[in-house]
Length: 426
Image (cartoon, rainbow, N blue to C red; front, side, top):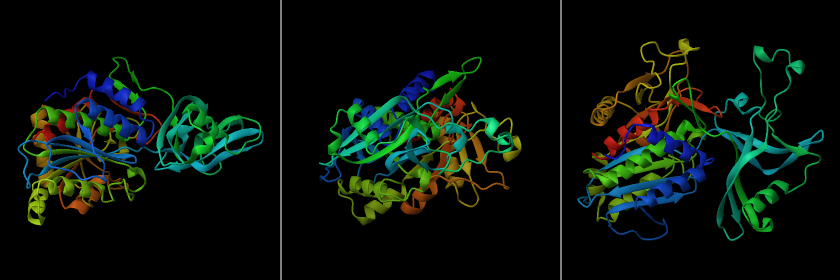
């Protein structure tokens, strides 16, 4: 396999994240990686043939890519790597121009589970897609200090260190200038940056992002501080693993399914709760002449490895973790288990993960949530329930999950990619 777990992969991840401030950008960057490796873009509106090799389909902020080996038949199963392209952030409202008390501001909504204080007093840019009257989509990125959500001075809130409450409506509106707001000024500004006629822009999906670049830190530079590790680290690792599978194909069809909208429930046309992946898998098999029996056999021989970040044990809050299952940064990829199926992992799934780690020569860890705390979830249970395919939930251990800037061991992204490549080349 060509995937190696050293700093080269992490360097590439840093570039990938910097170029991917939104899910739409992440998909475009993933497509660029795949196209450079010889993968071909397909349209959902066109008929597909049984051509072997690498292909991908983009649907809004999601991408599904696959590699069909020449030995594949109508009953060949899949090795599916699941991930999601979205991260918690501040989303620009449809009528964005607002302001108060002599400040020009941009109206935003909170998208996903955002620790709101991590977005205060940071230099923020704006990115997303602009849609013109003819339906054409244009990516736009202003990766420079443009906005700021200022915190209230401690002199005006003497109890701020006793637990600050930030109201999503009242306290999170960023500033971007002085004076009275003017209707349409944000779109005018972005249209100019994208070299578009503002009058032609009739739709947009825009987000606020932190402009600080990813960076190594620590005495030995053994740590990585980076926005959107949850979950672009898995998207990038999955793309690298799929490319490795194209270089050294296994006996199955390797698939990367990078969905949007995981952070707000996955119930969308481009989310794991929708039909996107199932439709693609059935079309791949149908192009090879599969009937209902063939498709059922192929699904029975398939596995999903859902990759999402997980919690490294926090040195200042170790009591929040389950004492017998405390993953550490730098300790290798983590398998996630929950008795109430917030994660899809079961016994057979654990064995599949162990085999992939052994093949890659990578250590592994196990995460179980503290019984006294509610457990998060992933696309794993959703995908397992929708497809009826064996699914295992794994991930990379990080700190500051969902913050505007997260933290991991610098070697962990490459180890995750190596395990996914071992899985994808089965």
